[in-house]
Length: 57
Image (cartoon, rainbow, N blue to C red; front, top):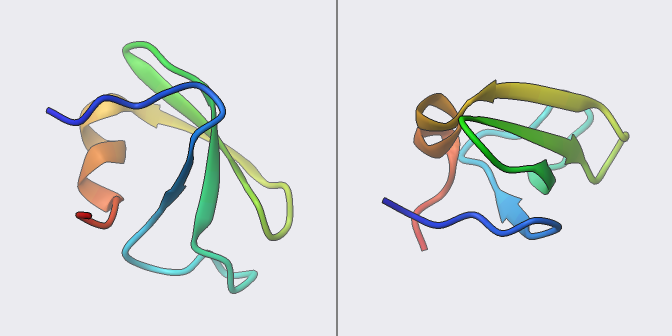
C-alpha cells in the first residue's frame, strides 16, 4: 500500500472539473483530505477509495 505524506502533491487519473489533476494532501489517517491545486476545492474520502483514483507512478 502506498504511503501518503502530509502536504504531498499527488495526481489523479481523471481531471477535476476545473481542469487540474493535482491535489495537495492536507490530512492523513483512515480518511484522506485533499485540496485541488487548481480551484482550491477540498475533498475528504476513505483512504482505500482515494488510493484507487491516484495515478500509479
